[in-house]
Image (cartoon, rainbow, N blue to C red; front, top):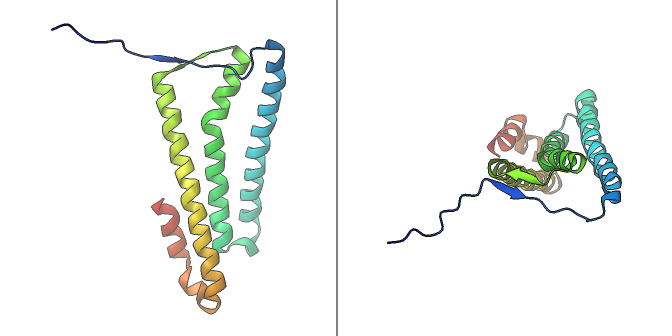
Length: 148
C-alpha cells in the first residue's frame, strides 16, 4: 500500500492588505494608533472605576472586567500584525497561529459572557429595583466573573 499525502505544515504564509509598499507605513501608524487608543481608553476606564468609590457597584465591576478582557482581546493579534508590517514578515508558525486563534476565541467568548452578565445586571436593576442589592451581591458578582 502506497503512503498518501504526508506533508507536514509548520508555517503559514500571511497575505498583505495591499501590494503597494508605500501604504505600509500609513497602515502601521493607523493600526498602532487604534491599538494604543483602545488600550489606553480601557485602562482609563479601569483606573476611573478603581479610584472613585461611588463606582464600586456591580455594573461598574462588570464594566472594568469587560475593559480588561478587551485589552487582552486586542493584544492577541494586533502586536503580531504590527511586527509583521514593520519587519516585512510574511510567515507565522503553526503553533503561533493556533495560539492566536485559541486566545482570540477565548477572549471573544469572555466578551460575550460578560455582556450577558451585564444584561442580567441591568434586568435585575430595572425589574427588581427594591431587591437589587440582595440579588446582585458582591459574592454573586465575583462568582459570575470567575465562572467565565
